Image (cartoon, rainbow, N blue to C red; front, side, top):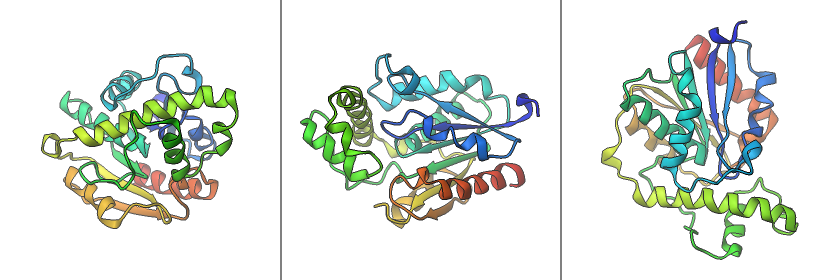
Length: 241
């Protein structure tokens, strides 16, 4: 199938992510959908570039990467920090009067106006950063022991968590538009998000949201069995919805 006729699924990573986690998706998803990963500066193949330290700057960067797809049929997916970026990116697109995504897939993240129990760590010692990363699970403790890995990943996690923490403190609920885009919210059964936190996304869209739960903790999205089921939901929503 000609790529120009495919629905684009724009995928945005969690804090510390490189978009490599979405590579396997392309081999599973149907031929009618094309995975478009967003890679932020300082992450993955852009490791040598300067890290961004605010959600606003990440949204601007993401917009620059995906704006050429906005006149095609598309959807946006983000996990954890990526869900924040995905939501704010959709707000930016809407404010510009451009076509909205067919669906916004928000994974592993509470509604932005609701508080989190995770302690803020910006300007904190490395040990607190380590505790925060390991609390989420899914990241090998080796990166805090191996000097080469520490040199790579500590700055990335620090910048990403700084951006998330500052965003939570500065968020103004009343300044956000109510979208006309469908929301599908993904969560892990063992993640620390409550039903109220997940259902809170409803106030940002006029359409009824769908909440889908999968086995696992915060990084349920990296389990291959879960990925297969998540992709089935995405395919059904984008192709048949």
